[in-house]
Length: 128
Image (cartoon, rainbow, N blue to C red; front, side, top):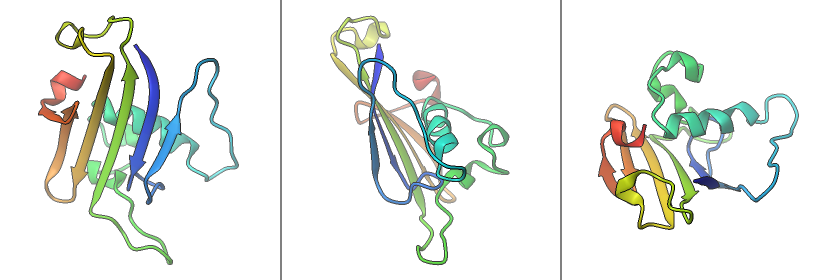
């Protein structure tokens, strides 16, 4: 399986929907200090089931939700989706027939996280 796409909405510094395409070869994350490079890596870990708020540089898991700035209001929801290419059929046995696997995690303030695989709600264990 290979990562193909990463979509972030309301996750940390990514207030608007942001899409990263991961092409064949080497994909790098480059930019000045404070632009959100580490937030991209954390988004992947969070979507794949990270449960430690401390490892996400927060005091609680809701700290991954965009908290607002002087110019933009805070969000109540954060969502990260990862698209995986499974065309070689080397993914988990329950997804062997699928060429594409979409994993999504959504957190809503005061309601917690939910996980989805191909838009079907699943347990955190299924994603991990």
